Length: 250
Length: 274
Image (tube, rainbow over all chains, first blue to last red; front, top):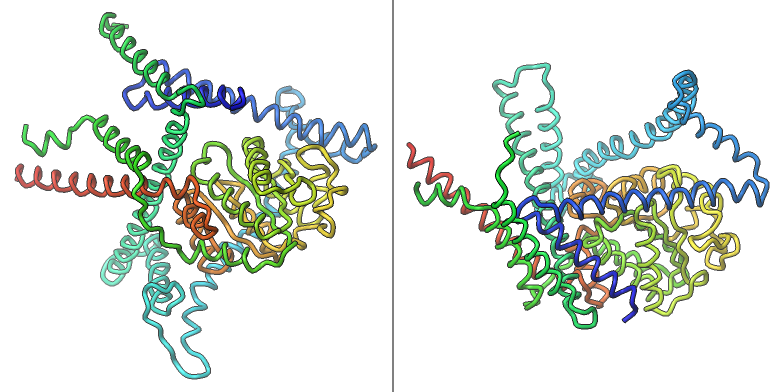
């Protein structure tokens, strides 16, 4: 087993156990791991961004290939930094204007096309497909997402939820029934979302436990066993010290 | 204090312990519960299966180590499938924090499948801009990525011969844990440059992507660890995702039981109080 793999296993096991120690209660070991995570993540992103953007996409092409045109986006980017000089801060507005204008121009038509028009079309199209050249057809299979019954359920769901968020008229009488139907669809949607969230969180736990089991192997030097004992011992000592110290009255 | 009150005020650490045991025991002693393949996962598999040898397959690894347990097994299964089919695999990431992990992942699977960097596959790395990178790739791939992750000019890579932009991609899958991810690839990539695409995502994101699947905007979706397990089953190479399915089922059962019990105790307490 290469040394870096063994060191990596010990570090990963140690940090996992320190984070898990929060399940017992908030403690300095958890805080240590938490701060390390934030620090390492930010450091990694800064180094990678510097290397990719500044070195490989700006300096090298200008110096080695003479791509002088790159100085234009560099200059626009530099204008952002004028935010830190109060007298010149107004110049940063040009950079922001460029970003906001370009971003909105790119995003608005594409987003409207993809998330509104296409979805409206998909809600209506299956209903229209019921009437073909051979008369009216209707498929009742609930398990088939493309069935006409499901198309009607989706249509009712979309309409009732939209009506629920329409506040210009009072939700009474028939309106109340439609709004209630909308709430029902929303509840089902929240339930599905929560179910998937539980599944995702459990997957993360499974991922960490799978690694801990793997790292309990002798080829790694059993870091899971030794570091679990160390973490439990440290938590015990911290809990004892906490009991001995008088509570802070300030 | 009644029994119901005691149960509703139970120390939450007991619940953590219970969930921990429900996860750990099936991992140590697997039962091998059956895994049924869903049509959305089969959609991605069938499309890759239908691609002729040498087709260009683009995999965007849009996640970082925080989502590794769910998306890493998906990426491994997809890469194994693509390499087995002798596709030309182009990989990249839109997440700067996932660059090192993505490189390790691609290199590991390529080595395992005996594939050569530059000839059979390439990892382009990360380029800044998110959605702008997708648009740039749609116009000119070489301008979005002048060099690959190892610094080799992309114009000199044999694998990219005949690939000028996203229009030359046979199939594309984005494994996304957020933004930029599957949605951005659809909005700024597929919708504009008209290539076929599928998606993979974390469990949390899956319900939000089902509308895209139903409308045919993406032709398949691999959702969470469960999706990865289904894909591993389809390619016949069981890995970490299949191994985790027993634990997933056990924890789900435990949570369902806890929800039911909690409701029972709550209503019993309410009845006692009148």
